[in-house]
Length: 319
Image (spheres, rainbow, N blue to C red):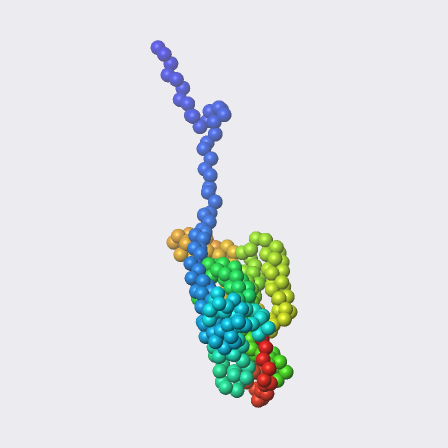
């Protein structure tokens, strides 16, 4: 009669068998999907408007009719769109009187005739082909990327307000009694975009990986562009005014959430996830300070501009 095999407790056997180990998964991390870039349509539209306004001023100028076809540059190839003689306009464009008629910045007109709209209209005019090409290439190179990241509304406000700031400082700096001149061009608005890039880097410091490299390369680009202001016939005060306006506006319009922030809509209900605040304290501080300085600068600039007395302008004109 065979023996019944002894009962075996499988868990007490001395074989090299271990209980299965329960692995506790780490707490889930929630990351929002990467933001989709905006479709850039405003900056190309600004480009087209600037080019269209330059063609319009050449059409209205009609160099062959007012100067004589034999004296116009590139006549008869361009017909009435040909340029004024080089000694009148070295930038290859229309006369000063045409630019003044259609919105160039003229301090006498702004102060004494109440034509404050010239502080904005002058940013859509250009003195010549060389002037236009330089500004429009910069606009496409800088503006398209900014619009893709921040959208048309923010970049549109930044462009217009920076151009206004550049025109305001330019009009304050002009002294028609000593140096009768006009000012045109989108340079102030373009320098505003550069200034906003710098303040955007500062206020969104936590999201950048190579912080110092990005900062140094941007400062180099800004310094090279500001150096252009020392070339004759270039209004450097408009560059500085636009840059300062854009720099302050960048703290206001281009603020991003800090690194690690997750919107509540990307966190499942009931999840025990510690959320960071959307912005850091220094971002709010810079925003408030920039807003106060910007409003104070615009108000004080306009006050100083319109407090000037009667302007005595000599009959000579130049850019």
